[in-house]
Image (cartoon, rainbow, N blue to C red; front, top):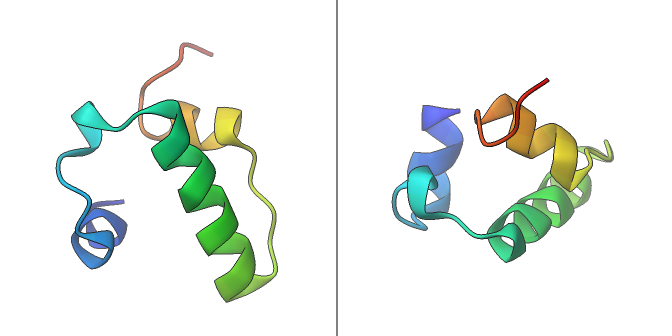
Amino acid sequence: MSLIETRLNWGKSSEWTNYDFEKLSVAIQDKTGVTLSVTTLKRLWGKLKY
């Protein structure tokens, strides 16, 4: 995750908004063909409880 944060250069992930996670979801899908939901990404980054 730190590698993704570094490559994106969007600042600290602790300050990311919902829109940033939406952009990340699209970027991952464009790059890999894999769709990850905003909710899943937020869980991975510790923004949501399981």
